[in-house]
Picture: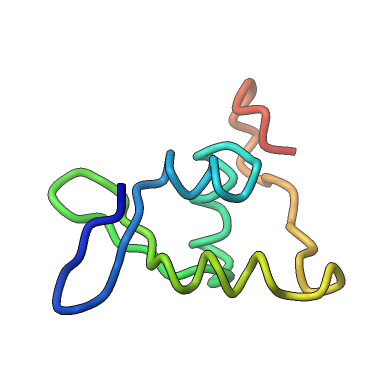
Length: 78
Protein backbone atom coordinates (compact mmCIF):
# COMPACT_ATOMS: atom_id res chain seq x y z
CA UNK A 1 0.00 0.00 0.00
CA UNK A 2 1.63 3.24 -1.14
CA UNK A 3 2.10 6.04 1.36
CA UNK A 4 1.98 9.64 0.23
CA UNK A 5 4.17 12.41 1.64
CA UNK A 6 4.23 15.90 0.18
CA UNK A 7 2.36 14.65 -2.88
CA UNK A 8 4.88 11.87 -3.61
CA UNK A 9 3.92 8.18 -3.41
CA UNK A 10 6.24 5.81 -1.55
CA UNK A 11 6.27 2.05 -1.02
CA UNK A 12 8.08 0.04 1.64
CA UNK A 13 11.18 -1.99 0.80
CA UNK A 14 9.10 -5.17 0.99
CA UNK A 15 6.47 -3.74 -1.36
CA UNK A 16 9.14 -2.54 -3.79
CA UNK A 17 10.74 -5.99 -3.67
CA UNK A 18 7.43 -7.61 -4.57
CA UNK A 19 6.93 -5.19 -7.48
CA UNK A 20 10.48 -5.80 -8.71
CA UNK A 21 10.41 -9.55 -8.17
CA UNK A 22 13.38 -9.49 -5.82
CA UNK A 23 14.23 -9.21 -2.12
CA UNK A 24 14.13 -6.24 0.24
CA UNK A 25 17.93 -6.54 0.59
CA UNK A 26 18.29 -6.17 -3.18
CA UNK A 27 16.02 -3.09 -3.05
CA UNK A 28 18.33 -1.56 -0.43
CA UNK A 29 21.23 -2.27 -2.78
CA UNK A 30 19.34 -0.47 -5.55
CA UNK A 31 18.97 2.54 -3.25
CA UNK A 32 22.68 2.47 -2.47
CA UNK A 33 23.47 2.30 -6.20
CA UNK A 34 21.06 5.21 -6.79
CA UNK A 35 18.99 3.07 -9.17
CA UNK A 36 15.87 3.90 -7.13
CA UNK A 37 15.20 6.68 -4.65
CA UNK A 38 14.66 5.72 -1.03
CA UNK A 39 14.97 7.12 2.46
CA UNK A 40 14.94 5.76 5.98
CA UNK A 41 11.95 7.37 7.71
CA UNK A 42 11.25 6.58 11.34
CA UNK A 43 13.02 3.22 11.07
CA UNK A 44 11.32 2.17 7.81
CA UNK A 45 12.76 2.31 4.31
CA UNK A 46 10.42 4.15 1.95
CA UNK A 47 11.08 3.99 -1.77
CA UNK A 48 9.77 6.51 -4.26
CA UNK A 49 7.09 4.62 -6.22
CA UNK A 50 7.86 6.50 -9.45
CA UNK A 51 11.52 5.48 -9.26
CA UNK A 52 10.44 1.83 -8.93
CA UNK A 53 8.23 2.17 -12.02
CA UNK A 54 11.06 3.86 -13.93
CA UNK A 55 13.48 1.07 -13.00
CA UNK A 56 10.96 -1.52 -14.19
CA UNK A 57 10.55 0.33 -17.50
CA UNK A 58 14.31 0.74 -18.07
CA UNK A 59 16.03 -1.39 -20.72
CA UNK A 60 17.65 -4.57 -19.38
CA UNK A 61 21.14 -3.19 -20.01
CA UNK A 62 20.54 -0.48 -17.40
CA UNK A 63 19.43 -3.02 -14.81
CA UNK A 64 22.83 -4.56 -14.15
CA UNK A 65 23.09 -4.93 -10.39
CA UNK A 66 26.40 -5.03 -8.61
CA UNK A 67 26.94 -8.04 -6.37
CA UNK A 68 27.04 -7.59 -2.65
CA UNK A 69 30.58 -6.75 -1.59
CA UNK A 70 29.83 -6.80 2.11
CA UNK A 71 30.39 -10.52 2.68
CA UNK A 72 27.19 -10.52 4.65
CA UNK A 73 26.85 -14.32 4.41
CA UNK A 74 23.32 -15.46 3.97
CA UNK A 75 21.62 -12.35 2.64
CA UNK A 76 20.95 -14.14 -0.65
CA UNK A 77 21.60 -10.93 -2.57
CA UNK A 78 24.11 -12.09 -5.12
